View 1 (spheres, rainbow, N blue to C red):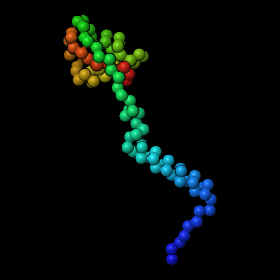
View 2: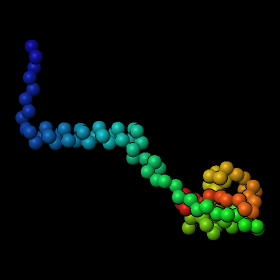
View 3: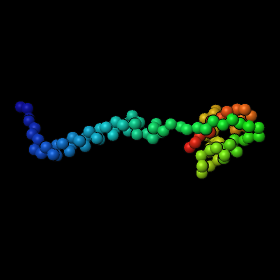
View 4: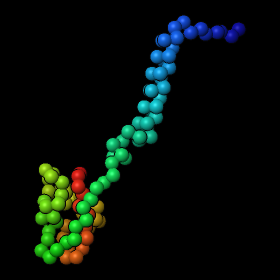
Length: 100
C-alpha cells in the first residue's frame, strides 16, 4: 500500500521549500568557489620603469600599497615579476601591486 502525503499548511511548505533551495544554492556556491573573494578580484598593478640607482625597497615604498609592510610588498613584487631582489636593472619594466 502506498502512503499519500498531504500538505496541511501551504505557508509552512512554501517556507520550507524556499529555505531548502537557498541552502542548496549557497552550499553549491561555496563548494564550487563562487563566494571566494579572491576569484572576484582582479589584481591591479602599476608598471614601473626602473631607473639607474633604484632599489626594490625604494620602489616598494614609493609605488606600493599605502600602509603595508615594505618587506611584504618587495616579496610580492619578486613573486609577480619572477625575480630576486637584486635582479633589477635600469630600463627594466616591473609590475608593482596596488594592493596586497
